[in-house]
Length: 284
Image: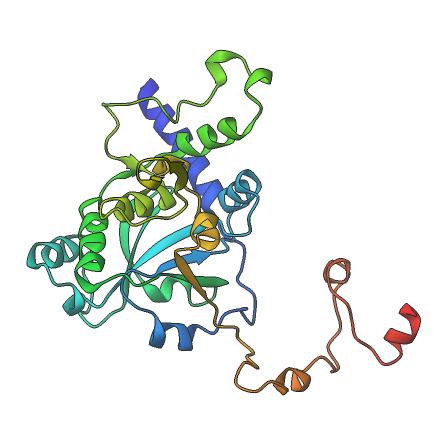
């Protein structure tokens, strides 16, 4: 009975944490263009809309609260074993574009790329990743399907970022301790970091100078990886698909619809500027 109550309380808490605010009427990202140009093994960064997303943003000091790995369509996966495993976790049409991700309340799952068609997203593309290594990264990620989401690791990361001396020893981060009994728990960015680590692809490595070999790289602990690390990494190209794009002409930004009849709400006016006629004169 006690275990059942505990499980019920935890499930209620998870439901409260993952409940999302409504998406913006017009998203910042052009999803139609993204879905046509995305490639297998691209990392998708998401600005989440849930309470747990806000926690992660505060902990990591970044607007990116979630990361997913793009798989592609089922026929684009080379390994028959990997295709079979995807089919065991996703019962959908074979031409659907898929991602793999670790999510609170669901664990590591396969979902359609269209799950984020209303969100602010960014693509981080591993530079010069060859086809076979990309397939190996996907194979590793798909093997993690069914793993639980490790919510403790989020709080461990928060404790790790706090000054060591202000916390009692029993509260300090356990990120570097081994937990043999918990091999099937992960978080979104850790799972993806481990997948790239499996082919020794760098994200944010430590570079040390040595007298014998010149330089040496050290892979970062994947448990310390956050979604924004893929954004910061010099080994990933950042690709953005703004909903209103002026990149095809150096002067098209002058045609952006700054003026109109729409009004800001009181809440919105704290963060945005209503560019009314004469507004610039007021500033001066």
